[in-house]
Amino acid sequence: MQSGDLKLVLPLAALFAVFFIAPLCVLVVMSLSTDAEMHRLTVAHYVKFFTDAFNYSILWNTIVLGVKATLLCLLFGYPIAWVCSRAKSRWQAVLLFLVILPIMTSVVVRTFSWIVILGRQGVLNQIAMGLGLTSEPLRLLFTEFGVVIVLAQVQMPLMVLPILTVMSKTDPNLADASRALGAGEWRTLWKVTLPLSLPGVIAGCILTYSASVTAFVTQTLIGGARLVYMPLHIYQQAIGANNWPFAAAISIIFMFAVLIVVYLLNLLTQVTPAAAKS
Amino acid sequence: MTNRISRRHLLGAGAALGAASFLPVSGFAQGKHLVAATFPGTWNEAHRQYLAPAFTKRTGASVTQSILLGNDQLSRLIAAKGGKPPFDVALFDRPQVLDAAKQGLIAEYPVAKSANYKDLLPEFQDKWGPCISMQIIGIGYNPKKIKTPPKSWDALWDPQYKGRVGLTALNSQLGIAFLAEINRLRGGNEGNFEPAFKALRELLPNVGAIGANLGAYATLWQQEQVDIAPYNFNFVQTLKGKDVPVELSIPTTGPVGWTTSMHVVVNAAEPDLAVQYIDTHLDPVVQSAMLKPPYDVIPTNSKVKLEGAITNSIAKSHADLAKIRSFEWEKLNPQRGALIERFNREIKL
Image 1 (cartoon, rainbow over the protein chains, first blue to last red):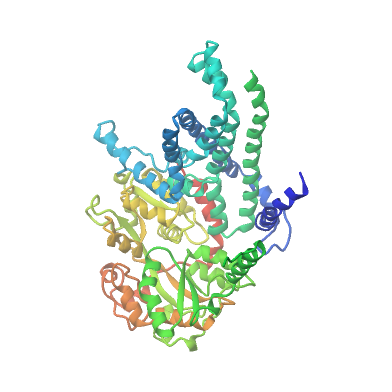
Image 2 (image 1 turned 180 degrees about the horizontal axis):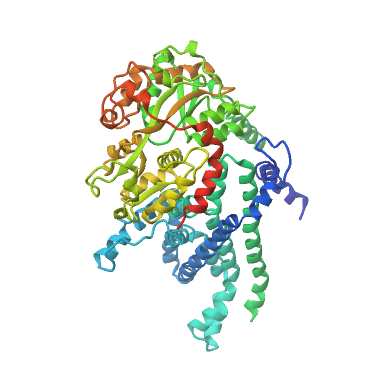
């Protein structure tokens, strides 16, 4: 890197140092303090977290929630990206607009509209009862199932856009060559398109996963207070119980838990070229 | 002629504009400016409609109303401790007053500067700041589904309401107050919450939803997700005003609630204006206006005649108002964290 490049990075680096690194340091110190005034140091909050199975279960449920939402997102997002990348340019613009559309409204609005859809008197239940599929309204809201569905929809653009970017950069001749050599559509998808798009898939998974596990608004509005995930746990400790040091400690633990999963996903990118070659 | 703007000029002008944005607003504005916290929903609407215009008329100063829950206000004051607080006037429920006073975040109220203070009912006078209203809890129910108003908290446990009962998490005042009231009725006290938790565990088959916050809780009623649940008098009045099918029934064990009060924040930028703002809220004219539907803000000034929905079930006279039972927040407050944790542990599917 040349010194000119370094200078260009400086403003952002300074911004990061002041508004991200410094608060993070305060958070670390707070998590190691006996009280919010940060008078004495202690590891008691970490000990408390790691010696209580209840905290584990919240952390585990949050990670599992993120994995489920990411997989669902991938299941629906990949075909959308694939169709999008193969569409004619005019249609591509329309499809792309539809994919980005959800980002243009606030996540609070999107989540509240899901309450209207999933509620007892909601659209889904009205349809199910109208068709005679059920006599009693189904319980969709305040269940993990509901949270996963809403997260998958809310975070969908984060999955589709990276995959689409990688797919549209891929040389279309490779797929043509595969077909010319006798492979069918499915074999081409499985052997050529999918391996080549893996970097996009992994990037999409990282974005979707990180956004899903930290999605305080969606988790609390759709899951209610009975399903406690880490963001709500932190919020309750910080604001409800005024226990800032413990809230800081679980924030740090949560951050590392998310980072580990992101790191593992990142490791996969190193496998990708080999997969593509095969 | 062409005006050429050099890069240096452009950057300089940009920097100057940027720096100007950091100048105190009062330097430009005519008159003074106050920042006052208010709660979301009913409170913010009533304060914007009646309190702000009356304050401006009285002092000539303008006011920005910052919408924050009591606990959020407390957190921000703690974070800003020793520096410039984010607002001059705090609006707290009783438990936060005790925390804020203990931590030195609110100043003693200068009674001598507040003309309306002496007219408050004695129960609503407090050295940390006057009570501006009371919040009462009762049994909220959907009159479309439940034709006879429930008369006892025990109605929530009635098997016919399986899956139809709502609750709110304990980080809301409503949640804690309901827990404490059930605890008292089932023979517990501030040192022993076992009866309340036992009752909640028994209630679980009936519970359809637990709102994570009061906004989500209101949605439960709007979407008719629940038919019966503990609720707050003012929130019910607001929802009724929006044609949501909800009514409040006060159980035969009597109304129970807590006071809501206003406080001058320590190191406030405009302490005198803050007192004037609070005093405006004590003004009988302002309190009478806020008592009208859909706000039905319960008055604390003895010169305000009680009327409307409040007289149906809560208080017909000032004497009734003064008798409304409250909780021992001094004992409850330190346990809040432990109660929230226990609730999360025990009250799940």
